[in-house]
Amino acid sequence: MIVAVLLVVLALAVGGCACVLWAERGGPRWARAVANVTLIASELLHSSRKRRRGGLTPKSHSGD
Image 1 (tube, helix red, strand yellow):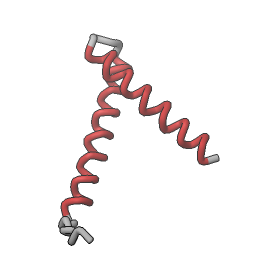
Image 2 (cartoon, rainbow, N blue to C red):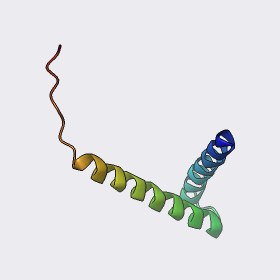
Image 3 (cartoon, rainbow, N blue to C red):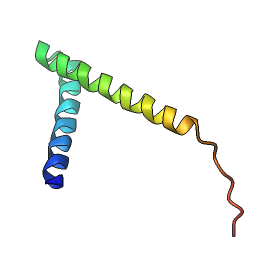
């Protein structure tokens, strides 16, 4: 079951990237819409990662 979910997520990611490339080359309106959704989702994930890491302070390792 988890493998199926991961395959769907992978297919959506690859399809979104393909639409971004196609939209940059003047693809149809629906490809531009999918590209916009993909880019917005990417920005949201990126900003949520930054916020999660921003609160953590890096700890120095003593090297032992």
